[in-house]
Each structure stands twice: as structure tokens, then as C-alpha cells.
Amino acid sequence: MNHLTENIGFTDYPPAYLSKKAKGNNLLIGANFASASSGYYETTAKLYHTLSLSKQLENYKQYQNKLVAIAGKSNASSIISDGIYLISSGSSDFLQNYYINPLLYKSYTPDQFSDVLIESYANFIQNLYKLGARKIGVTTLPPLGCLPAAITVFGSDSNECVAKLNKVAVSFNNKLNATSQRLQTKLPNRKLVVFDIYQSLYNLVTKPADSEARKACCGTGLLETSILCNPKSIGTCANASEYVFWDGFHPSEAANKILADDLLSSGISLIS
Image (cartoon, rainbow, N blue to C red; front, side, top):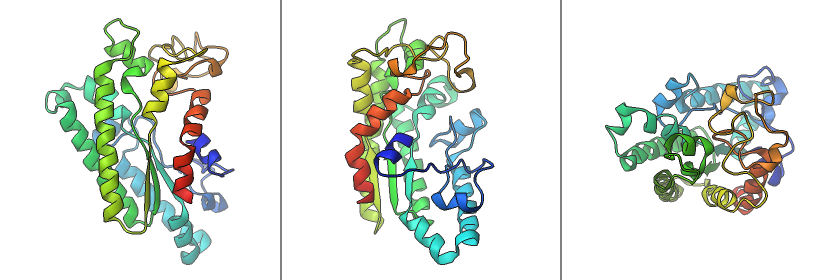
């Protein structure tokens, strides 16, 4: 997301809302309410002791009140309506919840679970709209079956992308696009742009050129993520730019730069 904001002309990054930097005039450039390992499904956040979308929305409401106190009601209203809202979610719902949670995969087919997530997405967008958001961008799911951790856990000793997981991601993305188009019609005076990261990342993985695509840079490159991943982790590569993935779930900075460049036209359309 940072590379994408650079591409559409922003020079400052909003501080994390719960950080010490998120106070005073720093809030005038916005804030980051995201929480790693959260998702569209509320219990995904609970599993990993992270912030659910509903909690992130509560924090955003608090932010609005702070903004009014700093800038005044009129200026705050302009900042809120002119601001760009970027949403990226869903991968953890599948890989870190649905596919490892028998309570879910025995209750829902992947298609049914997708419908649950899409309903949550639609409700979130409408709630965000009610709070004044008018320029919203949302990313599709990546090719889930190509993430190093997914291949390690679900690949049956293969080094190839897990086809069934990619099929689920494509189906979800089709629903995300269709739902976003309906919301475009339903909600007046708004821009809702879908950033399709699936194909770009799939191309990087399947046509990696000189980059390593099966193993991530961090640790063994097969599974680690979050606190298990840092530059001092045993086995971490010396040059992450030579890898498509930084850890078992997330692209490297070099890959993110390529993805952001591919999405430039979509990003420009959000502010034009």
C-alpha cells in the first residue's frame, strides 16, 4: 500500500492510529487502522488477538472526533470526504482460519464462506460511507495457493501453486468485483476502485525471472511470518530484493513495488 500511495502522489504515510505518533497535527494526514492477521470474518481477528474490522471502525470514529477537535468541523469534514481509504483483507480468513478450522470448513463450503466474507465487506463499505468516506480502494485476494506458507501446508509435498486455493481466490475476487459494482450504483457520489493484485502476483510467481518465488526471504522461507520474521531470524536472506516474498504470506518490498506500478492506472482513477 505504501508504494501505491507514493505512485498517486503522496509523500507522507499516515501513522498507525494506536501509535504514539498518531496525535496532534500528525492526524491531519490521516491514520492507519489496519491490523495484521485480521479479516472480514470477525473471529479471524479473535484467533490471533488482533483488531477486527468492527474495532477498526470504532477507532476510525474516535479519529474523526479527534480530527474535529484539531481542525474544526468544516475542515475535518473536508479531510474525511477528500481522503483515500485503502482496504486489504481476506487472505487470513482463508489460510489462517477457514482451512485450519474444522468448525468452519465442516459448516461452510469455500463458496459459502466467500459469501459470508463478501457480506461483511459490503456492510463495512456501507458503514464507512455513512461516516463520510467517498474514495475507497480495495484489493482483491492474491493467488492464495502460490503463497509459500500455503504451498508448504497444503501443497502435498509439491513446490507448485495449490490450484484449489487459487480457484477459491478467483471465485472470491469475482464476487468482490460484482459486489463493488453494485455498491457503486447504490451509494451516490463515491468512488470504489478494486485493485486486482491476483494476476500481477501470479505472473511474478510463475514467471519469476531471476527472483526466488517458492521460498521467502525470512527464515526457512517456507512458513514463517509476523514475529517469527525479522532480519535477524536464522536463515534470513541477505538481499530480499531477489525474492518475490518477504515471509510465508507477504510479498517483498521489491515485489510490492512491481505490483504498485501495475496498479498505477487504478490508483490514479481513485483521485482523478
